[in-house]
Amino acid sequence: MKVTIWNEFRHEKENPKVEEIYPKGIHDTLSQFLVEAGLDTQTATLDEPEHGLTDEVLEETDVLVWWGHKAHHEVEDTIAEKVKVRVLEGMGLVVLHSGHFSKVFKKLMGTTCDLKWREADDKERLWVVDPSHPITAGIGEYVELEKEEMYGEHFDIPVPDELIFVSWFEGGEVFRSGATFKRGQGKIFYFRPGHETYPTYHNNEIQRIITNGVKWAASSKSIKPTYGNKQPLEKIAEKG
Image 1 (spheres, rainbow, N blue to C red):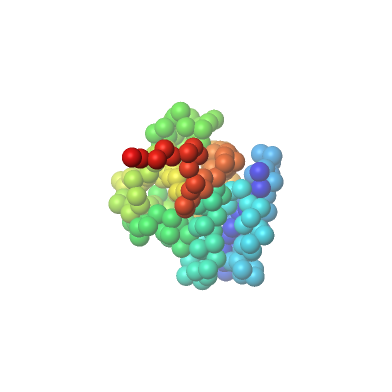
Image 2 (cartoon, rainbow, N blue to C red):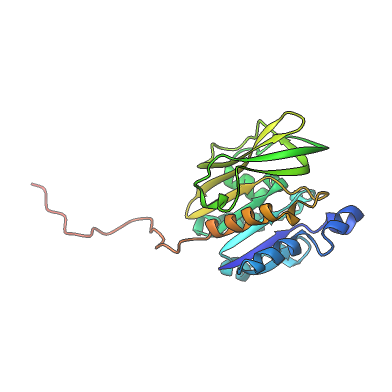
């Protein structure tokens, strides 16, 4: 399995607090624990030519992990469309935190993907609502994060194929923090935690969930369906 981790890589360069938490970028931290889990990873960032997502990179990618926040508008429409097409063809997609507002995710959801938010050091309790799902393997009844950015309902997404996690925040809000979707031949996992000013991606349980999500999103390599005009498999009897 080939995993490509895409990150804006802007906050880490502009905010000393974020740089301290993720000195080599969020993508590097994600890559480290995925490699430790035995996955073959590569990274791509916004300011690389074609945002690091050339045709060759996308073609060899089995699962794309996406983290974006402040520069969604800078992602070229042509690149976002290429990613969408690859998902429809069978590439897995794991969308993290504020990637809910990325062009890629909104294209695939067909909705605004808007929500409520607040930065106030809320405690978050991430409840497992589907303990039989492979993405929750090795996780207890909930994961507790001391501080995180609050995301609150209503989250303007289509009804998920599967709801995996629901978050409760100290301020009182709840949020559908882990959900899966199928689009074409591809599988999508949206996972909410991961605001850049908190060390969320250093949390072992969060790392396990993301690793599980990447493995789940990988294509089963099934035969792709064909479309268009089709010759009959058997001779069609003449009708009198």
